[in-house]
Image (cartoon, rainbow, N blue to C red; front, side, top):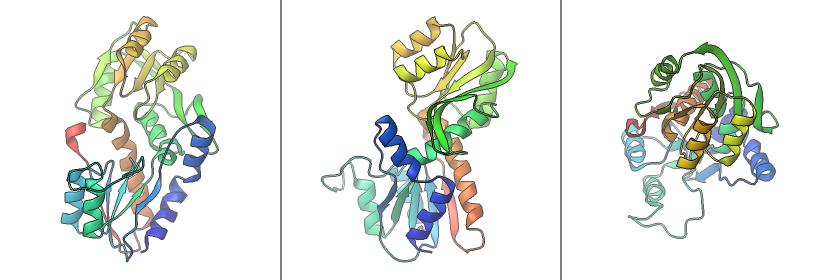
Length: 262
């Protein structure tokens, strides 16, 4: 299988056009797609949320010809490649002949993508409204679940997401209406969206204190997952879909989960 075919399969599951649309419509930055093409046939693919040194080591041990990541291996321009530099993992892959593909904002926003999976993992079945809507997807969701107590909800998250590090600020309400945002989704806009749409619970990652305080002042439950836990869940489901698409091709795949960050 060639790298072009891998990109075509990924595009069928989470169209790369969504990344371009999101950037143009909401002023974001992304670099989804081929990060490194070493040429040759792809026979083994390692999937990993990040291109960490551990992921590169696992790719080599697995005999991978390609690493497929969620977070782009090259997000901003790299002005040099050095052994101990920012791009050392890319350099290691290049030396080992391992190509790299990343699906970032397109996979965040796609129907059945990472943000959608976060909502469903929390118990929501459909988004009542989406903060940043796109053609065939979007980011930031309000969903409703059968009301449960905060402690029951927390246990559900720990079990479903395998989350080991959860910050939980309990408000004065049961959990029934959730505002959820995968990845680094705690900012002024998402907080305002959650409050204005009557959410009783806010779920995301990477907050600043004043935003947690604003949510608490508004009486919301606040659940802060690690960035990794909030996205690894949905990326694994993408991997399962991808694996199903290539099951008759003889291509071998493996999923690498870095439990340090759960």
